[in-house]
Length: 317
Ligand code: FAD
Image (cartoon, rainbow, N blue to C red; front, side, top):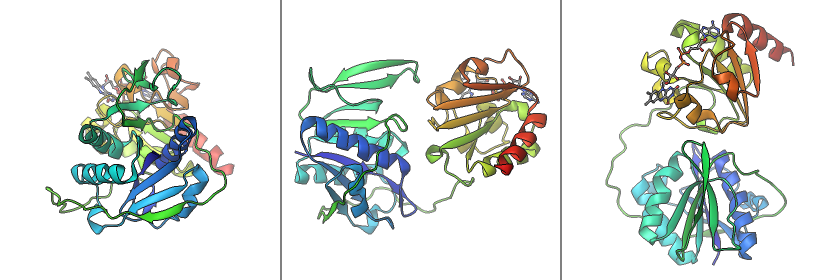
């Protein structure tokens, strides 16, 4: 009865969040005295056997061209079939865009209890109690999953990824892939050097940047830090930046290691999308800006003065 971890991927490569999910799933399996195994739909250019170093003994792969693009309904059906054939009793996803779309469908299909946005290992001393983040990270809830099959989606950046030694056995799973009810006509790549949800560092701009013509310095700072760019909602609403860069309660929710906010006031709706960042740096000319209360480091200053100097200093490193 292994713990099965869903391995998410894009553009031929396993997503960073999946390494974290694998480590987490292996730790859950250890608690339960079971094995941890991975499940990959489609194919990647990465070495699957090497995933053994995250604690999984086996990787099940469903190699089918129809699975190269995410179709949540098809993915859910294939995962349900895979779970039945493997006999898994705990299924782990990352709580990223794919996990959010697929995990609840899998749970419904398997009549399994689900905890989304988990932030810690289950407490198995009194059932199967999983801590999750609620109210945009403002509080935690401990949820006991009582069903025989359990589904967990792990909040990205809430569990330390650990790579050790070991290789995983690869098993090609023969699962019938149902016909899709949707037809993908085009895939448009989003801009930016680093995908926002995968980025370890994010440089974000707000209305304090005054206009789209000033984003060059945001992009340059992001470039030297190998960071993704983001923005506040009014910036996207004003079409200074594309909507997929908008972070917050109504935008993308991120948890990078470092979030640098330039000319952003720090409204509660903005913080809801970024307050899980490990370290927050705020640059704002108003010392009373609410964002400073949530910041680990703050610079009271004009972004047009501070950011170019910061970029030059980082270039020297
Ligand atoms: P402002 O509030 O205008 O702040 C600009 C900041 O820049 C100020 O603090 C100012 O001191 C500083 N500044 C100005 N010039 C300079 C300078 N030269 N150098 C340094 N600092 C400077 N917002 C989001 O971001 N994400 C969301 O998901 C979101 N969802 C929402 C949902 C709802 C239902 C509602 C009602 C609102 C939502 N908002 C969201 C909007 C949110 O309430 C704020 O209005 C918004 O975040 C403010 O954006 P801002 O900080 O860029 O702009």
